Image (cartoon, rainbow, N blue to C red; front, side, top):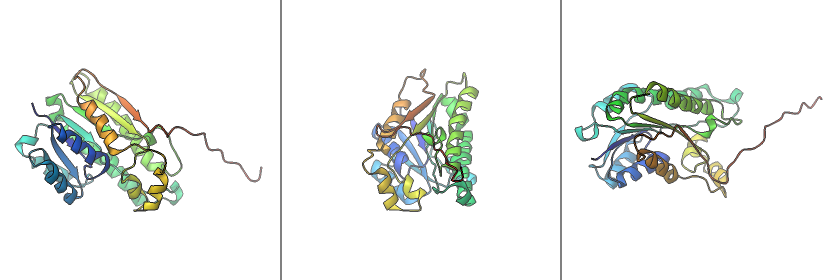
Length: 252
């Protein structure tokens, strides 16, 4: 029986790699994102019988609802929801951060995620499906400049645990994946398109790739239905933890 996965944020990075991975295994894929031209390129590449493009901004609940209502019959029975859409904006400390950037991260990473999850819960419960929420190690380990981005990802991790509790006995599985350093468009978006900053961050680090996370999500989706991975932290070998920062009072 052909299964269906909905992947948010499928226009680049993790989401695009997931769309290719699942479609390559014969799944139907609902690929969502703001950039319609990129979604249509996926449809052209992978086939309209395998991929349905749903273009909307995660912050626009009405557009999201309209897109879900417009799904063709063959794509309506969703077995897996991958909440991948999200972003970080800015790297400066909180006093210098823009409130607009904070609000955009909260509205996308939190409000958009919970909205689409709530809308699809009846279908996922009927199908005894799987919810995969893409969190981040930033939700566990704070760092300077991470402020609101890290807080939104901490929410995603805790929301996943709450879903597990509330869906107890329903047969629905829930996993929070928390990737570390991964080379996608993430840093370009965060820095407003600074390619040099992105190249410097990843140079020589052998970071994770979109394909690494796509493979992980596909593995989760194909586990036996009685197996639930609650939380999965994934980092490149070359990334680990540093020491605590200490401020030295110059007057002391």
